[in-house]
Length: 194
Image (cartoon, rainbow, N blue to C red; front, side, top):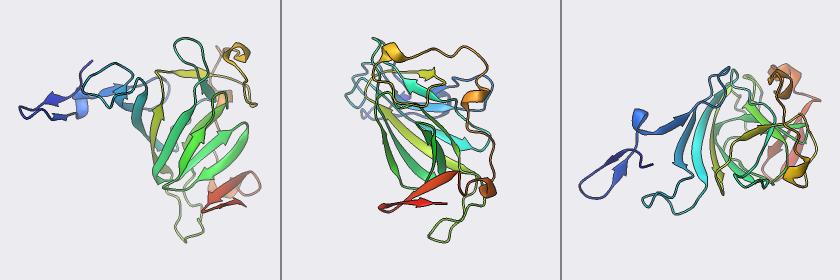
């Protein structure tokens, strides 16, 4: 699938309805803007995977999931928190992710995301505003595979499909006052308690 508008000079600009925007969960306002959707597009960046961004607010709470390739292998994920602060659950543990952080999630690690609640004071004196922008990349085409597991899966054969209501798999709605003692913060080279 070729996206965007091809200009006579060979450049391509992709915007709005000309982009590949997915909404994988009908019950939440999540939009995945895929800049490269896992096709063999010769105008693309030359890889098979998916590359895009998701704007998060406190209303967007992904269900816990892993990523499985089309041929049944667990896949890693790389995420950049471009601006704002995220709240991620990795193997059942909550971590506040500061703006500008790069996160590598190994294959098989169950994880979920939401925006860090507004009002949390960060070490530089700034406060979270309940929003962040995630840029993601997968090495191969994948989708969300919801799971109740909180421990790392060694292979996709350990994955147990979740077919019920996704709410129990989401980070609960929290306030900044709820985070101390419940989450930690990565700041510079340290892992800090909140």
